[in-house]
Length: 251
Image 1 (tube, rainbow, N blue to C red):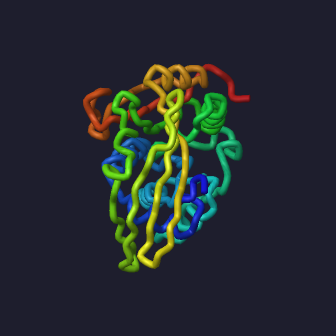
Image 2: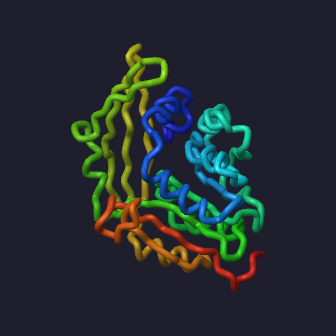
């Protein structure tokens, strides 16, 4: 199943157990906290790990995601009632409603098609106030992280809250024009086996900058890691901070 890790109720539990709070969450929270009591959009919020934390920090937070199973898990988290949850895409966003927008966990790479990415950036530009900030991460293609997505290097065991354990691994199934197709495999202790397939687009720094400029954003910073390292000297990431332009009108 495509994107089953976000859509299948059992795999959503596995995703939540595997993807704990980390340095990336610290980074995003620190950037958002620079704007006190901000109106925050978390686009592609998933199971709401960061979303709920931002609300607990005093921000007014909206989490948007197309996967209903992930949103159900997010709503059920302690503090989930403080967040406005929307099942859908960026097309549903209101105009000039947010001071900060975040896309975490490489959500930006799921927009494989350039037209889809451009449309999402246009929606974000419309949803942000002039000067509002957009913060997101994407893997640096020069790091070639997908070469570790194979049954040997990606083999892992994930402990679940009910004391169960899942054996998982990832396998690349295609490499085409900067798009990586892959499948996650999950074997449960009770014998059930599930898979989740997806594709990610690895854009260069220049491509990301060009797409942001076209969408009327001004790029403030691009880091290479979560400790503000320069590109090429960090975690194999592009960590982007941009501002919505002030000159172009929002139509």
